[in-house]
Length: 122
Image 1 (cartoon, rainbow, N blue to C red):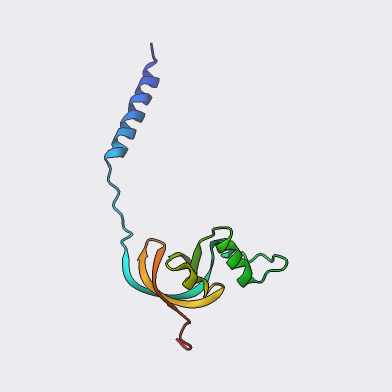
Image 2 (image 1 turned 90 degrees about the horizontal axis):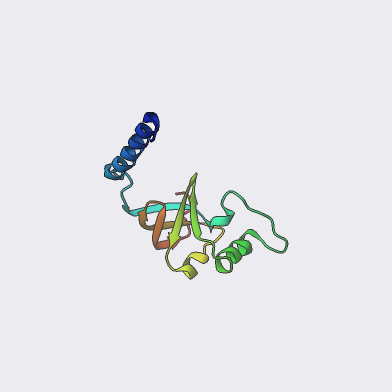
């Protein structure tokens, strides 16, 4: 026979688990359309950590990380990091450099419509 306290604890735990499936958590992160950001285009591995690798510049290391190690291309805007989706060859032209990007933002993923050098003085 199971002691009363253990039985009560088991019933309470099972009830909480069952109730957790019934609770709907509203999502406050709605996709935003037509955003424009200016920031640094780099590889996800290099964000905040620009390791010095013998024989590599920041540009060649970012290219190596994306093309051969499969790292994501990201845009760093202040303390925010956005994973970029789009034509990899077009994005790589701006790797390790600043760019202005327009596109569709869904969470932290930015589907790139356009990418260009930032306008000076903007």
